[in-house]
Image (cartoon, rainbow over all chains, first blue to last red; front, top):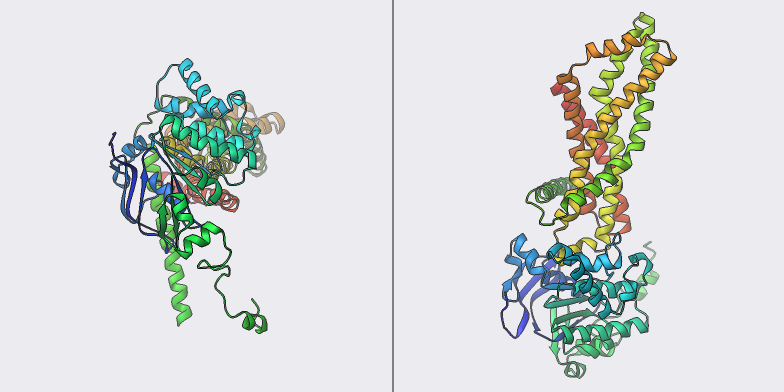
Length: 271
Length: 260
């Protein structure tokens, strides 16, 4: 269903708790169409949860998640799997199918969702692999690839069906500078060349800021702030500033809550 | 008093967890088995699983069946020869295998050989986000990963149980007839007279089907429901073998009481 609206994803008043811990408390986030949106925040603040909510792998306690005009949590199983075909997601580990070759991994979505003839599947797979620079590796198995290459193959697989929305879950974690640079460029390039909308969830500030058109900073179950990158850099909010400048202590304390330091050292109680 | 109430609360908590897991596994089974797979290659997926679950279990089943049949014949002979009725060893071996040991031992071996492998494989697919990524590609992992494995278990275990019985009876004949000198005519014809097709062969097969269902269900569910860490996978694999074995033995008693 094509709905021409300014926003491809519209999260309205989302609340989500896990094991009695509040991850999101009535959060509103809107992802503009055709742009790269960065979602940033400290580790463990629920960034990955957010992507899983959009992909309906988790259900919110309350609130609406509207993707392309459809409220995702209300969809039945069949409609949901149809809606997911418009979304591509790059998982942190790449999540390639280890029993299939690189070629078959990228061909997988085409084979299960389309009945294209074999030579057309082959052309599309090679096109997608060319886009991520790994056409030459199509015969390899996933365990023969480096971490960065795995992620690029997974990226080729995620765009195999030409989704409208791409979601990247911590794409820069554990990458060497070269493959990091490659991924940063690819995300931007694919977004613009294929006319996608992209969500990049990350805590790597510099990389995300360099490609994102728009940034959200989340933490404490809230949206702490959003805006253009430079606006946020100069924000007055101390929490945002601490995150953006990478200060170790501030509103987010360096120390885990504890009893008095002296008391702890002097007490005879065994821990 | 407070400690007492705490204990009680813990017991209630554990009970609720068990019931919740039962509910989850029921919904899981229902969703995996109902509704048609939309993928054209469902048969291919099933064949692949039949091979890894069934064909690869053949070796352990055949070897175990052979030895169990041989031991039964040897033990039976030593007791029966005291009463001068060693020619009944054939029917004893056949009835024991068909009614009890065939289905039960096959199920236990199957839980150890194939069940643990299923749990570990699915658990690892979960831990490496392969199941999530299937979901995001728009493929239901219950249909694509789980259903073929369930069917493969349901189909292959009863067949393995039959093979186990046949090999066991043959092993019994080897020991009783060829080694201990029981007259081969009485070994086979006594067996033929004593074994009823309906009450022995079919009931044994029903047991095997019931065990196949329980063992495969437990194995696949434990993998799907496990905590996606290396520790979680190892615990789930252990649970598969323990739960499946206990379930088979308990169910065997109930089925035997109902059947014979």
